[in-house]
Every structure is written in structure tokens, then in C-alpha cells.
Image 1: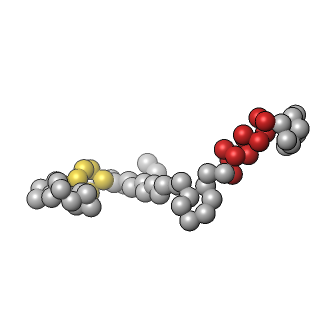
Image 2: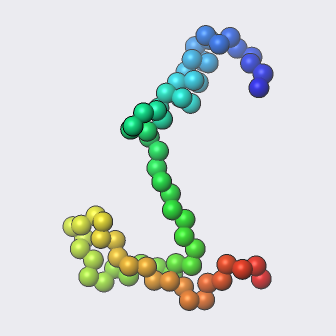
Length: 69
């Protein structure tokens, strides 16, 4: 990569802080994303709305097919 500004230029310093200064250490600012196919919905019957981990159960789409047509 070509460098158009000096290494110690304030824009480059800010750029390095944004890229490398936030996701370090034990408390990295990252999230985990799970992607699922074949889900028709979520069954919320008997869900405890005061319990954040009780989100319901998966309703699978029985017609879902991942293979190419």
C-alpha cells in the first residue's frame, strides 16, 4: 500500500487508533453473529419475557432445501 501522508501525520495517527486501538485486550469490542438457514420462525409459547435467555424454540421450515435447483 502506498503511503501518501507521513507516518506521524494527525490523520494517520487517528487512522491507526481507529483500526488498532479499539479491539485489543480481554474486552475486545467484537460480536458473534450466527447465520441460520431453514428457519420458518420462533415459537414463543410459554416464553418467560422476564428471562432474556428464554427466546423460544425454533420452528424449522420442512420445505427448505440448500441444494442448488
